[in-house]
Image 1 (tube, rainbow, N blue to C red):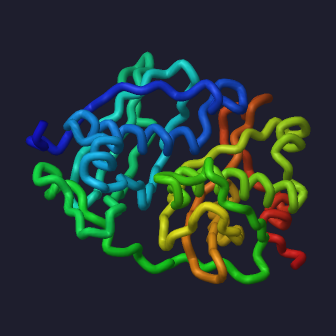
Image 2: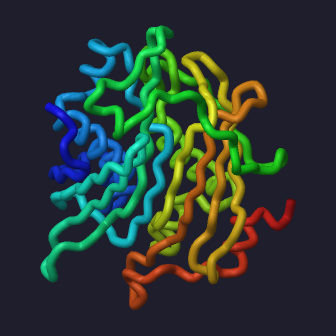
Length: 286
């Protein structure tokens, strides 16, 4: 089927395993649905990842994903995804779900994909995809820096982090961002289980972006660093992650994180970050 339109719409549901606190869906699953919606855009046109790989020697890979999450999503919600191709691998994604008051947007985002030539023979996109996606000539340089004394966690790229038998895929860095924030919070005395029990604070994410800036492969040891870089009106904080292999950047990420109150008179409101919490978040005693 030829690419004769730039917009498509499909329906998805969150995965059951992504409802980790009550029935609310975490940011990682939002980003996963956005990625799946773009892959479906290709499949709807007869150019899914398997077809591109087996018939053309091209590996369809997510390179960058940036999302704004204006509303919550729960486990039984049905999500309609609208995907618009802007050309050169750039896609705009909007996720909506039906509420009693009508359709509500739960994600607005951008996903950038590219084709990697697995043959080394100068493969090009099939003619019907030429306007939609490019063969990746290289990845952009890193733009995010995190101080050398920032919180650090090293991990080994296992096969389940990878795609096409070798390269660490975008979704692995999304999952690692979630894990790294959790490790950081525990390390500064703000472990999520403790805040849930003592304050009824539920972690929420309003923005996230994960970008590949290099290539990590199966077996590589990836050095990840995380730091809180800003606080927004005592309601949320901006965190940054960088990932390197042997000192060479391979991925970077940003996240805006806060807490919602789950009980009491302020239930449903964003929690105000008190002085002690801010002190710990920003590691002011370093």
